[in-house]
Length: 296
Image (tube, rainbow, N blue to C red):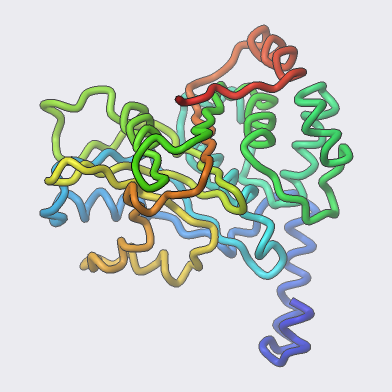
């Protein structure tokens, strides 16, 4: 924000107001909600019910708020913002109430301290040492392993799946799309056009960036299309999705077809329920040598 003031793009009074608000937010460890957009999943459900003639079926995740990167975390904060999205969904889901008692969506410094606490508990010592056992006060990137570690320390059952090489022509990953379809769609034939599931969103990582998968379309031509929340997408763009007469062009920012995902490798973290205390201990032991499930 200081840079923005120096460039004349932010008034000093606005800087001081925002700084005071941020300091208060940091002190209590809760995100200030300034980059949050709520209600998009409900708007998508309405849109698919009433329009989208090119879509045969769509499966949507449970409710999830979108969080975008702001002044302080542009370029390095995507992993934290995706964790906020995932957690916002779990906090709305009664099934995770016991594991997440009295929690609110934390701010980035609080998430950093939570990951450090998980390392102190003994999770993923290799990953911790790569980051010098420290995240607070740094701009260190986090990825799928840190998200898995943090969720598991909170007794959230999840798995990492590593799509470590292309499974289709021209460097594409159709197996990734099929896996996500099977996660959301327990039954395909005979299901209604729009299925609003109780499944949490999926954390999706590739080299240099991460995003959150909130659903999947099966098109009339039987191709698949992911629906993705990107922390790089600002609130003003996400708010366009809340309009009663949402335009199909607004959906473009969410839609990712097989041909759009051509990075060499993708990793996902998918939530599957709650761990008992004994299961948490077993997973902590297993994380001493971290191995992801590989496809193919």
